[in-house]
Image 1 (cartoon, protein in one colour):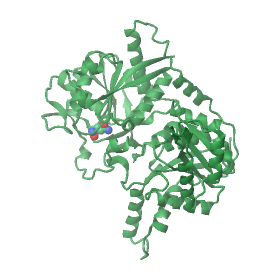
Image 2 (cartoon, helix red, strand yellow):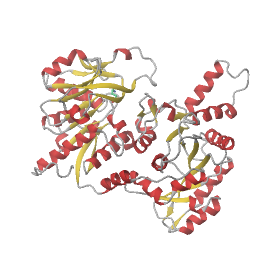
Image 3 (tube, protein in one colour):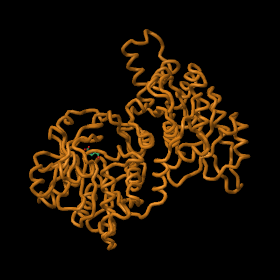
Image 4 (cartoon, protein in one colour):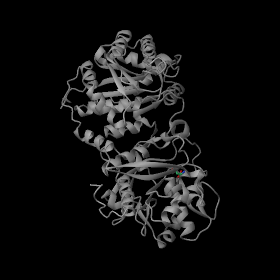
Length: 550
Ligand code: GLN
């Protein structure tokens, strides 16, 4: 174990070169895991160079999923990777955007804080960036700072400048920069090209930042002579040019990094001792992902299926739950706008479980409802998340309770809004950051499926919604067999619904996927996958249901 008596926080800046989408978030999360596994206290910050205050108002097709923290911030989906890998909860201070930084500085200016000075990018914006970068000073041994975008973007320049200043102030044994570059393979030449990496390193140096480690993302193995060339041209030590090839699962990245000594090189540069690396649990988890005993097919019904990043945490939660059940969950992606009661059999035939996804707005709702009717009446395991739960309530009200025009007030004016606006949402005027956000308690009813999964009386789950189950319909729904298995402790809000007469039909108003961690999984996902597996084994006539699970 490293000593925690002297807590001088060290900083690692991670910047991207060449192009985006090569996995900077995963690289930060993986390095974070390794440093944590060596006994250090680690957290990760993400700086996003866009002007939106947060991603909460952005379309998922643009930005991917909005990741909500316990303290109710709507943040970048990379924070999900940080939590899943590090097994540490993020906060609103782990993600900053250019919008937030300017907002803060402008508000200060209006209050007269700058005493008549001209307010400028340097030093006022960069000072605010540094304030955010050092927010956890003293609290952690190591803070990894992911700078969004790619070196050379106009938008990320103030962040690089702040990183340069901080490195100068703290010294190079307290701050290092890692460049994550992409090394393309040009097929016609049969060659790996280092030039884009050289340019990225050079551009960083123009900002006064010397990258000390270069991570080379690649689809092909990078031979030693190519690494030597990168080291020479980019002015870094040869052992600090590290190849990161494509891997079968993102969870393997920490193992690949450790094999190439990234963690010990980082610790050496930061003048920190390298404690023992403990990756056994993680390696076992990766081995289970790579060698599943069986597979099970589950449909994900949603409106944003054309862009899988919109459902990032759900996808990962299935990986975790699959690993725990020793199986691989294969997702069948279904666009809810395509589903009708005529084609539902064709689209969902043979499926062992259906997850109806979160979402906003009326598009695709009737498709979700048709899919829910299909699984409810055929005893196929169902998991509804947020909007998915709300659709399950509408479907049940219509088809079981006989209220033909039951609907959500979000979609249609109706005499029977079984889902309606929460009272404190009625006065909301601004769209940004005003939903019911973050962790809230939920009391579980003993003997229910939810209670069995969690094995706890009181749970805390994260929310992001404006609408809720209308209490005026609660007893009618209950009379027909719906169970309110989770409610807010004051019993005002229904948080979980399930059906008595169904093998596994559970809807939740919150987002369990946001709390699924790599090695532990989320209890509801674990139990949902188990129910799907059980159906598969039943269908195949195997009665030994425990076999692939334990
Ligand atoms: N649109 C619904 C609401 O605001 C559901 C939101 C969600 O699925 N996250 O309540």
